[in-house]
Every structure is written in structure tokens, then in C-alpha cells.
Amino acid sequence: MTSRIRVTENGPLLEITFDHPPAHAFDQKASRDLDAAFAHLCDTPSLRCGIVTATGEKIFSAGWDLKAVAAGDRGEDFGPNGFMGLKRQFTKPVIAAVNGLAVGGGFEFALHAHMVVCATHAEFGLPEVQRGFLPEAGGLWRVYRRLPVSIAHELLLTGRRLTAEEGLRLGFVNRIVARDQVMAVARDMAMQVAAAAPLAVEALLEVARSVECTPDAEAFAAFSAGLPAHRRMRESEDFFEGPRAFAEKRPPRWTGR
Image (cartoon, rainbow, N blue to C red; front, side):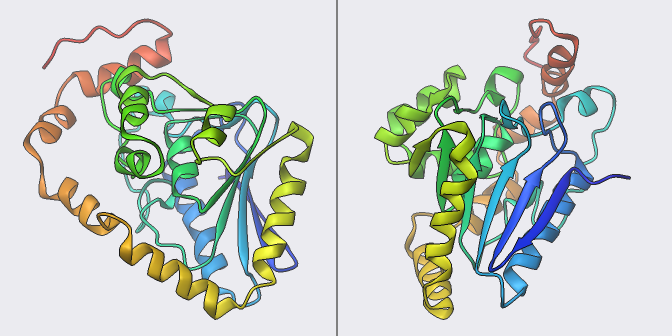
């Protein structure tokens, strides 16, 4: 089966490209392939920084492949580090070079990256609640860490998209550039990272993780422990109605059960 991920070493940089147009959506294999690329980045001494982008100019990633879910692919064997590798604690910096729309897992990945460079037309959204479930790959709590609480509530509860300009103003986005300059600017930033002392960079990331709010492991553990309302949602018919409605291009018919 062809991978939805392309991986290229560019000197000290590992460039990872989502390559499953038009939406660059992720299934189980794509998640495992992406995490394998991150493992290669973290385990290879000569690689100093990762850049993640996508082919085309419209979509960075739409996240979970809801059409596959609607067609009956309900497996969740995403690998040891979860969906899109988003449980992984990076030991080297990762830059999200966002070439277009980043929704669902695409936004969750940008929230997990250390820096974000995006095109002027890029937008970020977490529409999961509107489709009957939650952004469970870390976005649910990372969005509150990276954005003001009131903005995070609005994005989650209404599905409104965050514009590139708004993301820059709020400190989530590092650079906004023309769409044909996204990778060039990301590479320039990555090469500056590569010029720093590697052990110091790794230590900086370790310390930053240890002092940042609730550790990811505890947040994921809370989900695994089985919060009652979350468990009811996962076991409901509405949980599958959202993907079906999306695939059939119709409004969802929620039943509350």
C-alpha cells in the first residue's frame, strides 16, 4: 500500500510531506508512517530539526479520514504514539509549514509543533464537536495552552476557523508568508535551530515540557481512565452519525443516544 507520507533528508533537516490529496486525511497506516518518520528524526544524530508540510496549496490536513470511518473503517490502531503520532514527546524541534487549511488533526498537529509558519490564506479549525465527537489527539487541551481560553472555547464550541492573521496576533503563528515562500522560510528557521548546540536544544525541550501545565501523559491518562460523559459519547450512535453525514454531504441528524 502506498504511503500517504513522503520523507526527505535535507542536510540536518528532515522534511515530512503529507501526500494524500485532496485533503491529506489520515488513516491508521498513515499515522503509523508519520510516527515512524518522527522516530527517525529523533533517533538520527545528524538530523537536527523537522519540518512538516503538505503537497498543494489548499489543504495542510483535514485530520481523521472520516470517509473511511463512514465506510466502516473504525479501527484505531494508530501506533504506539497515537493518531498522527501526537502522543510523541519530540526530542528535536518540529516546525509546521502550513500551506493551507488545517482542520481537525491538521490543527492538532500544528498545536503540537514547536513553531508554525503558514501561508496568508491558511486557516485552522477544530470542528469535531459539530460532528459528534472531540479532538482527542491532544488538541482539546493544547488549544487552551496555545490560545486564550475564550478563543479556544469559541473555536471548539462553534467550529469557527482561526485565520492566519488572528493566529499571528495571538502568538500561535510565528510567521505569515506568501504561499510559495512557506517552505523557504521554514527551512531558514530550521537551519537556525540546527546551528544551536544539539544537547542544549534537547535539554530546552525537556525542561519546557516538564513545566508546561498538565503533562500530556496525565491528560491522555484522564481519557484512558474513562471519564463518564466521554465514554457515553464514544459509545453513542451520534459518534458515527457525524462521519456518515460528512461523507454523505448532509447535515447530521443527532439523536442524543
